Amino acid sequence: MATTTVYTTPTNCKASEGYRVITARFKNPARSATIAIPATPWSNLEAAEVPTQYRAILEAVLDSAAKTILSKHLSAFSLWPSEIDTAFYCEAALIEEATGANSDWLNKEELDAAWRASATRKAWVTSPNYQANAAFRKAVAHYESLILKLAGKTSQYQPSDLDLILAKLKDEDLTTELGSFVVRRIDGIKNRPVVSNEVNLDLL
Image (cartoon, rainbow, N blue to C red; front, side, top):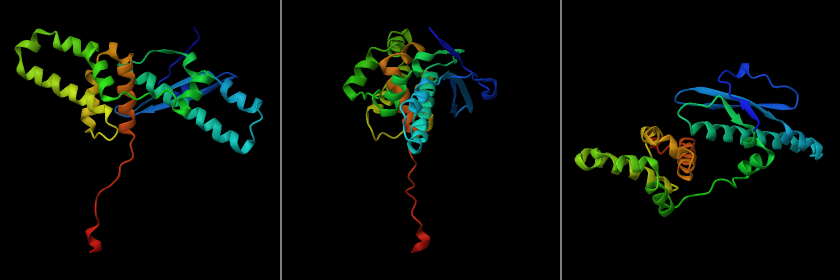
């Protein structure tokens, strides 16, 4: 398995010939991750004789796809790994990410089934505290409602709720279909354009 080192200081990542440097930036806390991956997908654009005026656009699309894959991958870990498998950044994976082919949606029934099979829920409902403490059961029910609401494409959340979902989801679940969906949905909600509903009454 070929791997690439994850650098938290971009300038420490030195790419040799045939590699491309990719940096993903994160908020809360503010930090970045930089890797050097094989530049084959970008080189193939030149080999395919893509017209110059389109090549820059396609290169930017591949860059964006690589950054998104890196961001999603690292968001699944409470502690970032020091290395990542470069297979995540092969040409097929980048194209799949760029076209959105990997963004399968879970409806409420599918999400409910995935949640009920999760390690997070199992740990909570089998805890002695679950039977003995009504407040604990109420907290579990609230968290469950936050999870299931992710199936709604227009669901609204407070930023603190999104942070809570990720913070309380067990690491074992982050590598499952449930974890992948949760991370993807939270990333999408956090990056959703903000539409102001304020009305300028000074115009009256």
